[in-house]
Length: 346
Image (cartoon, rainbow, N blue to C red; front, side, top):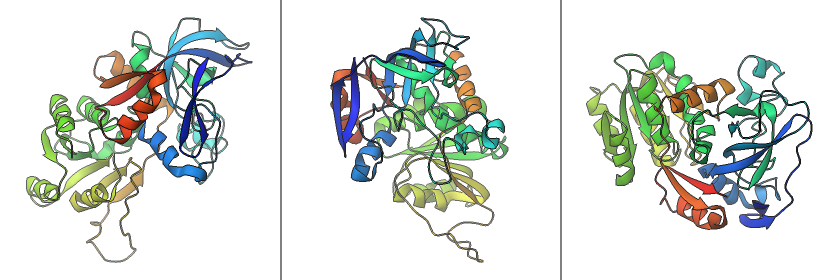
């Protein structure tokens, strides 16, 4: 079979490898589609600092059950399934408390839990082996376009779930970056909260997507954006900011518009920073602000995402590429040419 391998620092290659055979508790999936993520670009940009070479990339995968190993129940050949993003152990205290994205067995204080394509072989291939417990049924959802639900929808859902106590009637939320994650985060916000949503991006095409999906106010993310948001909120600021970019300009924007006791969720990996001091300074952040880096999501978050998609309330904007055109897909993503999510189709 064909698989996209990270063979060296910043280098991908389409390789011919053996079709995997499922062992006890494993399932072989015939991949229908695999999403591309800016995290994949981040891995390439890490160069020699990335610790895992030789594996198949891709952490957004969906397809059909192709073969079952022993000790697998509840699945049958032909079932449409999605691969969970975070492979928690299921037994440690964080996992049993429902915080499997903080698994202490398959992760550590400084390392994210096991994630397909970022260690174990991922979904940018014709077939993939997955532990049966890391699969969820898709029902009538088309698996060709379902892969991004595993991250591009899961990750915003987790960030939004962590802020629900502030997303009450009369609240205002800012979403920065209406790309792969942001366009799904906007849909989740509109479908599951009463918050008024302000959406920002630098790309007019993505701002058009924000309007299409019901943003209450759409603004270009430029030097005037912070003041326009403050003017819109009477100078007080917004209750929640979701930053799907994380670059310095968007981090500066997030901290400039958040209200006292507001919440900021940094989801993007753009490398931005802000000063934080345990003193009386209320310039860098107003009093009481809760700022958090948000990683992935939990099994419960994924089930919520699947339910929304099954109800037709969550639609993934996609650009499809044949698996053999993986490099073009990566290049287009890096150049900002992808509206929504790029998907490799074997």
